[in-house]
Length: 73
Image (cartoon, rainbow, N blue to C red):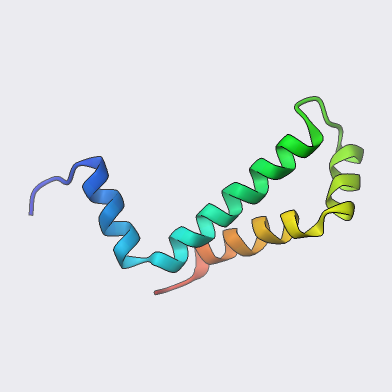
């Protein structure tokens, strides 16, 4: 088997590990929503306040990363 194109590699990974890919997308979405919610100049206090007010974004990042990194299947 030769080298795959980047799109072929992505298709192979997606079909082989759909739960891992969805976990990565959830983590990316939660991280993006958090970044856009607090802004680029946020301090640790701002991020903590945002995370306590919107725990679903933090849960998406944590559970998504756990699925991406540790799920076999």
